[in-house]
Image 1 (tube, one colour):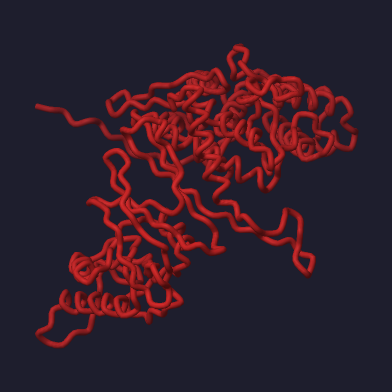
Image 2 (cartoon, rainbow, N blue to C red):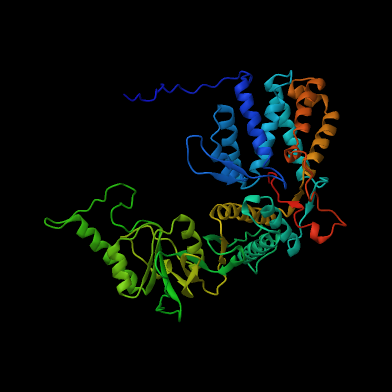
Length: 510
């Protein structure tokens, strides 16, 4: 007789303000901090994670993969992990730094004979001091990055990729991938337009729209085959063939229609699960839906459409109808590809089957051809030579699938850092130098704290020093585990070969 597992009734959530005195939760927090600290910094190591009851093994040192795979048991660690994931969703980088710093502050507050509310107020005030200092011109731990210097931009990308050992890149392959990623980023920057800070005739600043650099990964080819292709690659299950042109008014170009709604015929446009039609007696609903889809195909062909792209599913009958008449159908693109496709072609996404399709809603591509990368087949869409925002595709190759997934995340972080530089061309010193400098700064600032500020915090000067010492000693440079980084800071007199991994990207709040 088999016994079923015991199930307990789920208790409602409770919010308490008691001190964290449970030794089990403290031990879990120490283990969490040790795990994060061993992944942080230039000498950070890999972590192999697997659920105790089974499942796939994850090898990573990236916070975007590490935190979802951990599943922290306690409510405090779950709250901390959720906060770090929120930071990653907003900032795109610095997850290990934020998680490690928060863990060190949490662990440092256990031995203080200071009320938790006072500790939170003092730490919040110190955070404001650090943010205002980092934004000021007197900050001594930041440098201005020359956006016209390709070696410095390449150094920034190498810093991001070099901090992820799970990518399994050598110095030569890391430089090759960094060069390709930098080339794809420069391809998305408009070649003409007003400089930063220049305004129009009314004096207001002009907004410059960047293009898209789409990342496509392929397992099998070596890393040296990573390259940048102008235009967009769309994966196809069969051998991709070129699409014949035939758009009126544009010699040699191909007219494109893009739909962001389902063309399968089984989902209503309003989002309902069932599709309702008023049909005559003896006429099936499926036949009426199919007739509506074929009527849409006839209207598109009459407008000269030779490429139909859909974010969701296209009915097989409509696919056959279009392909028999020389048009190509691309379905299941997903929302991540529809936006760059619209930017590349200039098309407006169509969200209705029954609406009137006008030529102004259609787009154009210069041509298409088939591209094969490893075992994957793609249809290469080349955009028109127009002042539209450019779109390119960065093809990432690696022989190991786990390393390829890690490399894709690292490239996304590098893209975010480069885009942040366009907004504010500043970078912080790496190797723990910024954290050490900020620790010294807040100690100095606390010595000159005014009596008005102490009254605002509702504490004495002696009570401030306990949380302040915890913040200052909780520098994330301790996450290096006492190991000296190979490259610490970008300063004058350092040879170019030792500058490659010296600058950490801007991870402080903008």
